[in-house]
Structures are given as C-alpha cells and as structure tokens.
Amino acid sequence: MSRENNQLAQYVARVEKLEDEKDDLKLSIADLYVEMKAAGYDAKIVRKIIALRRRTPEQRQEEQALMATYMDALGMDGLPLWQAAGGKDGKFDD
Amino acid sequence: MSRENNQLAQYVARVEKLEDEKDDLKLSIADLYVEMKAAGYDAKIVRKIIALRRRTPEQRQEEQALMATYMDALGMDGLPLWQAAGGKDGKFDD
Image (cartoon, chains in turn green, cyan):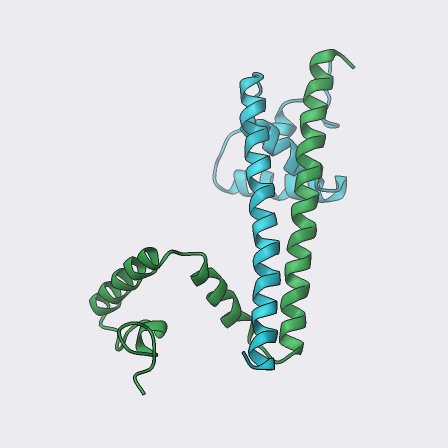
C-alpha cells in the first residue's frame, strides 16, 4: 500500500471507529428509554423534556413565541403545551 | 425530592451524559473530516465510501439495482457512479 493510500485508510479507520462508538451510544440511549418505559415513564415526553433542557431560557422563549405566532396563523386553538400548562413563568398558579 | 422524582432525575441525567458523549464523538468526527480536507481529500467522497463500507455486498447490489431502476424511470442517463466507474464487478477493464 502506498504512503498516500495508507494515510487514507487510516483516516477511514479512525472515522469508522468513532462511528462505531457513536452507534454504541445510540444503542445505550435506546436501551435506557426501554428501561424507563418499563418503569412506567412515557419515553416521548422524557425525550421532549431533555430536548427542552438543552435550550437556554432565551432560546425556549423565542421558540415559544414563534410557535404561538405560527399556531395562531394556522387558526389552531390554545398555546404550546408547556406554556398552556402553567402561568407566564411556566409554574402553576395555585 | 421524592423517590419517584429522584428516579426520573437519574434517568434524565444518564441520558444527558450519553447524549453529551455522542455530541463529543460528532465533534471528533467533524474535526477528522476537517483534517482530511486539509490533507487534500474530498470529505464528501470519503463520507460516501464509509457509508458504502457499512453495507454488505448484498445490500449494495440491491441498492444499485433499485437505483438503476429509479434512474431509468426518471429518464436519467447512465448508471449510479460506482457502477458507471468500472466493469460489472466494479473494477476498470484495462
């Protein structure tokens, strides 16, 4: 194998190793959701919560505002779930 | 924190840890492609090769056949790249 081809093969091997590790993590995450389901949690809701936690309060607020605008434009009733569920700061009033 | 809430918090923490590790891997892979580019390789082609290597010969053949059928149906000239590039076994004839 030429030096050039060897370099390419090494790059490919390195990417494939990292991709394999990524696949392993994906499987671990999937397993965890299966476990959660078995423990009685709704995996879809937990996924949404985790996605929400990855955003800053500013990003969340911006998304909420846009979502409300688009829902209004589409004539959809009500507000996005996490806004409709509580007061203006996301907490229940009582 | 109740025992129930504590369990949920632990699940969320475990998923978030794995998601962070996945993000790290994605960054490492992106870095590697930047490095390859700097070394003169076309990152898009290397990505395609790596995707191709993840398939079995049977899967590849099946995809090639479907791709040829669809391209023919769309009136597109020629065969998918990796078929058009060589003889029937993918090697150049000369």
